[in-house]
Length: 255
Image (cartoon, rainbow, N blue to C red; front, side, top):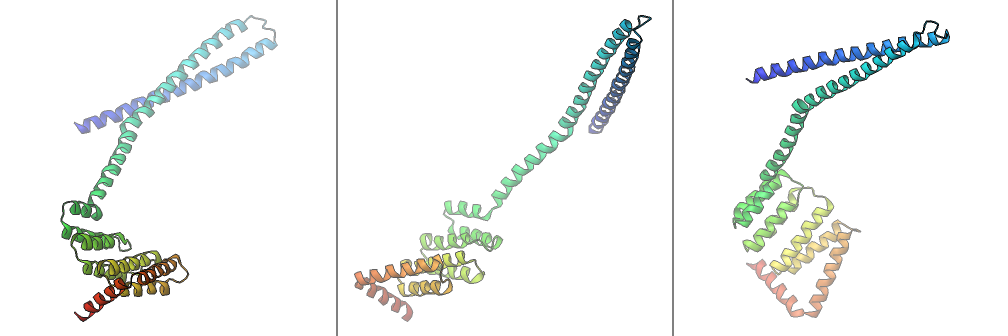
């Protein structure tokens, strides 16, 4: 059946092509006849039309002009029909297929995105599964810091494991040669975890000093200096809190 339709399609193309060719030939021949007749009319007029042929020749010329116009219309109609059929049968399905593949392939890529899977698992409360999905995302995009940050957030907020969150950030920081912005981001996050989640401001201060040393004369160094200034002010204003933080730090070191 499909083969028969294919044969019919090509027969239709051949028929239209033949008709188009003959219409073009007729259009050309009529134009050639008109050119010859116009020259003959001019020649007769130069001789003052002694035999009275000009009137009939002009009538024949008008008939040829009408014939040429008809052939031109037929030629245009056949040409447009051939182009239109080709577009509908071949070009339109081709572009429609490409668009369909683009849409569905894109949707398939979204469905296979590990970050998408991780977000779904977090919504379901499967935090361990989400961490595994995020590790896959980190493997797929080694220079993307977002999966590591999400893992540490899950460990701190959902699994109540700040030590695990710190270990994750340290592992991420040491596993790649990160760009300056990414490395500084990890270090600030690490200092925040030490200070807020474990009450270890001394370690947080040490990390801020590393930022200043590693990235001098950058906004990261300026931000670290500002953070150290804030902590110094808070220690002056609340010495008991500073002593408590130091006591907790020493307990962790001795344990």
